[in-house]
Image (cartoon, rainbow, N blue to C red; front, side, top):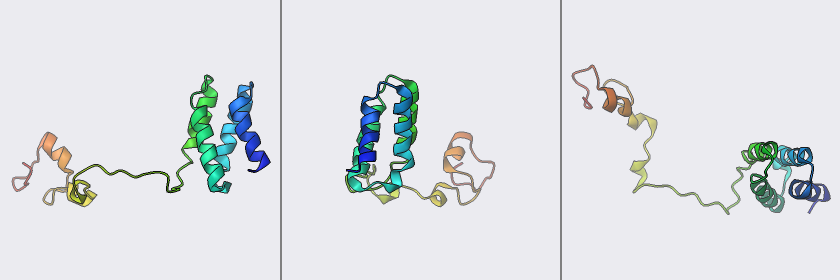
Length: 119
């Protein structure tokens, strides 16, 4: 493991100075694209732990950095809910073919057109 990377993790976990922990959390977010897979997972774990920090500035910095951790490494499972692919509607299928309004809005407020199938 890179010594600079290890120092960031150590600072984030152990520094008594909250401003140093904030800097470490932000740095882990800034350099996410430069991390190898092992470092990426270690950083994610460290940032996740930092989100329990009692200092709200550290918590905020960790949350901001975690938003940058979206690399698919194979460890994350994608779970889709629904019976089949028809449960996930493309935008075009969720629109009325007659009036062009979203089906959800038609159901709530109705449609002015007599030929609208959702009336």
